[in-house]
Every structure is written in structure tokens, then in C-alpha cells.
Amino acid sequence: MSDRTRGIDGTALTRRQSAMIRKAPLFFLLLTGLGLPAAAAPAPQKTADLLEVIAPAKSEQVWLQIPWETDLATARRKAVAQNKPVFLWEMDGHPLGCT
Amino acid sequence: VADREFVFGHPDVQKLITEKFVPLAMDDWYLRRQKDENGRFFMAMTAASPRGDAGDNTRQGRYVFTAAGKFLGFNNNRSPERILAMLRQSLAAYDKLPERDRKPEGEIGEVKLEARFDRTPPKNGAIVKVFTRVLEKDAEGGLRTCAAPAPGEGSFQQRGFGAAIDHLWLREEDLKNLLPAKEAKPGTAVPFPSVLSLRLARFHLCDNSRGEPPHWTRDEIKRAEFFLTPESAGRAKVTGSVHLETKDGKRGFTGTMDGWLEYKNGKLTEWKSVVTGEHWGEANTTAGARPGKSPIGFAFVLCPNPAPADTVPPQGSRWLQGYYEAERD
Figure 1 (tube, one colour):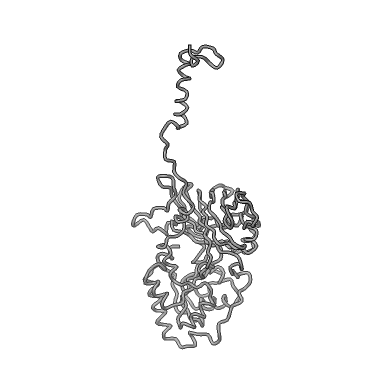
Figure 2 (cartoon, chains in turn orange, brown; figure 1 turned 90 degrees about the horizontal axis):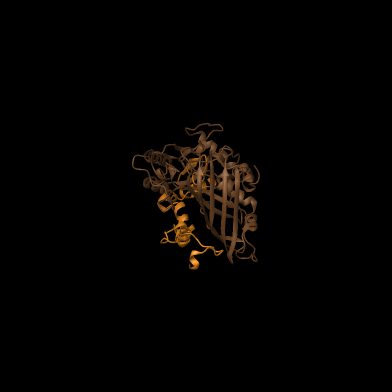
């Protein structure tokens, strides 16, 4: 009887016990997935990519092409210098921030 | 947010405002409370408008007036056509005005703002833009912007899928306490000062994508841990995790932060980080949230050369001391 049919204490193993031991490595590999071709785990999204996803795209910032002032006195001074009226966008919560 | 796209993203509105007016954007919450020269000027001008004497109530809307304070036009409608009509009528009225109604008699000097409403960006500090966007997962589990609704189902921004904007203000002393010392050991994580962790969590990790959100109270911060790990001279990795939740559990956010900071001679030269996670629930002012838990992202980006639009104060700074000293309630 070869060593493969004896337990670690040297006692003889039944055919069933022997078969289980022979199949154990295969069972382990299947259980852990190591015996399968490596599945393509999703790579964590990089911070730079997420920044691009979250921050506004250029097309969402068209309204910022208007040269908004945020100080009343500054706007009034410019209005005098350029002989123009002031257009005020006034909201509860700053229109250029807060939401 | 919808006004930004529908009204001020409209090419004809943009062209007319940019060429024929001095465009100004302000927060009514401050202006109608100010007892200084700016507040008095604004109240006198709006009293002549359809808003009339609104008392302590909102005066929000779109106004046209002269540097001397003469009211010319008002609109509080989202139709670009109606805005354009109001702008053209106001211009025609302006052209007919005598000089004395266009310009004040004297010079317009610097206005000393009422101290409790003065929101000048911190001297020698930093402004960090904070963008918020609700997200969805793609087939691989990555995060992406939400798909625009089909035609007829409303607009992208109306659904709160656009990017919201706020500003994180850091004072000179905040930077001093935050940035790693020259001798800091690379690879060793150092926690953010507690007051900064709380400022970030309480005032800048709020779902403001559908309106002005309530900010988190001190008790609603279950966890707010952020770390800086120096990687090399002048650069540190930033990481962290948060759990924010109301007492009844109906509104909350859990997420993690990743990114980096760069600094030189005690100055912040770059801050790029994201906080992503799941949020749930809504408040009275932010109705329309998606049901259950769903992904949301916050992006933090240093603004090194601020334009006027970048100097808008943090939404959470209406009580400025409470904003800076976020350990207080």
C-alpha cells in the first residue's frame, strides 16, 4: 500500500477516504476560484476620472461666460464708467453658489 | 440651478447681458438684512419695483437699475423670451434717462460692510470649489453621471442631475494646522485637525443638488475621519471616511475620500479629491431625491486664481463663526 492510502498517523484509509484526499486540492481550487481563469475584477475608478465625472462639464458652465460681478459697489462703479445699467440676479442663496 | 442653464445659458440672453449691462449676482439673504450702504441702496431700489416693500421677506428676482439707484425693470420668470423683453424695455428706458438718474452725484467709494454680513474670503487662506453630483453605477460598478431623462420628461438639471457648486474656505491658521511639516515622515498618516474634519463633513458633504440643503448638526456626525499621508516633499495623499445620519435615520450619507494635496511654503498649491458613497433621504428644501440609497459624489478642487464668481461664500457660512468653529452647534 502506498503512502497515499494511509493517514498521517499511518493507519490504512478506506477507498472513499483516499478518493477524498486525492480530490481535495481540486475541491480547494474550485472553492477559492484559483482553478479558474482570473475573472477581470473591476479596477477601482481613479480619483482623476471621478473628478471629471463629478465636476461640471464645459457645456454645463456656459452661464459662467457672463462676467458676473459679486459686489454691488463694484458693479455700480463699472456702470458709471461704461454708461450701462446694472443687471442684478438676486436669489435666496447665492445664484453662483450654494446649489 | 435650472436658471443657470435655461436663462443664463441662453445665447441671446448672454449676449445682451454681457454687451449692454453690468451683470451682478448676489445673495438676497445677506443683502436684505444689511444695514450698510449696500443694503440701503438695494432696499430703496427694490421698493420702487413690483416687490415693493416686502418687509423681511425675500426680494429675489432679476432687476435692472442704474448706478444712481433708479429702478428700470424686474422679472422673476424662467422664460428667456420674457427676460429678453424685460432687458430690452429696460435699455430703452435707460436711454431716455437724464444723466442725473444714471450716475450718482459723487464717487462711489468702497463700502464698509456691516461686519456680521461681511463675507470677504479669508486673507492668506484658500478657496476650494466643491461640486456635488448625484451619480449612478455602470455595468462594471463604476460611477457615472445619471442619464438625461427622455425628451418630455423634464430637463437634466431640473431633476437635480447637474453639478451643484459651493466653496470651502480655509483660513491661514487652518492651512498652518493642516499642511504637513517639512520633517513629516512620508507614509505616515496624520489626521486632519478635528475642526476641519467637521467643517468638511457638516457643511460640504450635503446633498445640495436639488436646492439649499440643511447642513449636518454636530450630533448627526457619526464618523468624520480624514487623513493626510505625505508621499514626497510638498505632496500628500488625502483619504477619509464619513457616516452622517439624522437621528431618525431618514437622511444620511456614507462615503470615502481619496485624492491629494500639494503645498509649498505653507501655501496650498493643489487640492484634488473626491468623496463618493451612498446618500439617502431628502429635506423640505431638497425634495425629489431618488428612492432608497443611491450614489453621490463630491469633488474638491483648489481655486488658485479666483474670479468674482469663485469668491461666493460657503453656503454654510451664514453663521460664520459656526462655520469656522464647526465643533460648535
